[in-house]
Length: 324
Image (cartoon, rainbow, N blue to C red; front, top):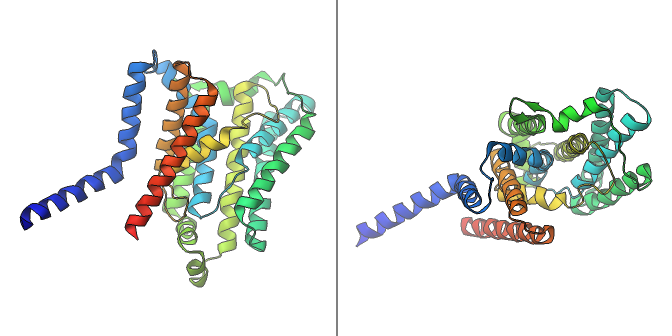
């Protein structure tokens, strides 16, 4: 009897370990199989590339937000900074005939400044990132509305479209940019002292401070990097649409958070991997694309994403409770 119990415990532990390591991949495969059966033309090369293209701005922002959440902070301003980045690059190209390279740099610079502003206040004055980035969300969105006069910006130079509409072989350039951002974020977390410090601060801020880690510098970096990623996502979106407006991407925050949380990054901090966020981004993109192919309305899609976030947070909470 004891031997049977031991075997059962070993089998349960093995299954739990396999599910923990490969559960996300299994979920993505099951989702792809389901959608390939139910949604016509889902599993075609052109649609797969379209999924990657549509996922690009969400994935770029999710890469930055992953670092923020691992650090036990949150950035609710990414969607609005994305809009600000799109507006800045479009205005410079349309109204000031700026060179594309300089316009893109200016857009990224604005994202960095807005992210650094949040990081400074969170680090120096211990203002909760939830409150500060919520305020930044309004500031960035309001600033974008003022800059555009609540109008859309069209007529961008054709060469600018390469970033968001171009292809290298069968792969969208926007997807390649997303992949590079994911790679940079992965290298930061896995190959640098800064990455180790991000995990340490997220795991226990006071213990990290006692250990000599500059908590302020870590908080400043993750929020600045998040701002950079958001502005880059906005630049890519403006290039893909060849237009910009202050209200673009208003609902993207839900998808970004969902991608990060589904990917296994704990909202409690100290835990998460970029590869998980990559898979989470693909899951959200496949769900969005599949529901569109099935003719599901956008409001029901929002309900689905919200339910997914609740489920992912619940699973994270249950997992943490079991470990404790």
